Length: 341
Ligand code: PEP
Ligand code: MN
Image (cartoon, rainbow, N blue to C red; front, side, top):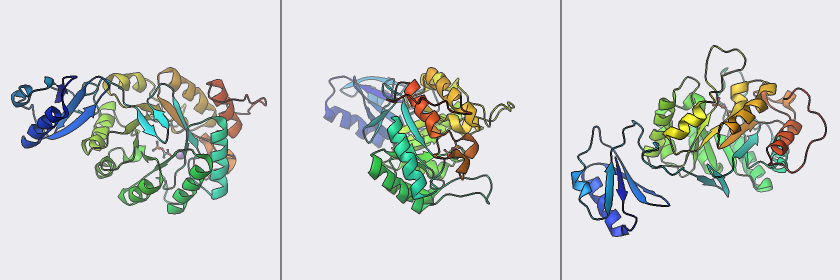
């Protein structure tokens, strides 16, 4: 349920509505907007009898939200959410570019990558310190040391940093060091982790599970928002289909569709969808054309040496050229880049 207040409603009137909602055993989520203040109501199993609220001074209307996800739904908030991180706006007028290696491998590797990311004109730096790997024998990430290296890169470049938490234990650490906490595809339905993310002050980058529907993705976002963290960024990263063209199939339709269902920003990870270097940038272009609020991609200073996801890492020159092509870089790369479209 959504309680829409009059434009001129006083803060006392808003507080009174919140008080009554709380007395009814429900949870009030004030949603300030440019044109109105609204109060989202959750915690009810069925339809709430709203007559007690409708008669309160300052209340313009009460809307019953029909979707199972409430706080994430566009019915609750028609204005698009803009997540602000270290001076960068995600969901604003311009797509954001988050770039960096799959994983933090060493101080030298990450600082080199960070310089390239900054120089190319991107907005944020990515790098996994805790890696969810399919095989227990693969490189699992540098853990805490990796987070400390990311902080060094932020100090050097000023780029906000994005890194993944894979469980509650790593969440505590990641939260302390990074600007945006990523919850990966494999954890999209780790409900305990989602609730934990909901109690964090940091924005959450929530990736779509590789077998998840949009409804499941939005309900996962709802887990986070229902705990009070409304700074959620959704990420399409490819789903499992029978196509063997790429590692996963990038569900491009999800971008315009999510924009009709939710006010949350939606970005795309073409790297994990592609799985192969030459497919990454074509998918990146297609994502921007489909209305993505940004991209998160993997670039490695020397892709052939990458300890994780080497086949999908694009080289620095291809990335610089792409940034120039989309009007965000300031210098064309004159050499042809081999093996990358
Ligand atoms: C990653 O971003 O490095 C990652 C593991 O992504 P995903 O969860 O989408 O597989
Ligand atoms: Mn990766």
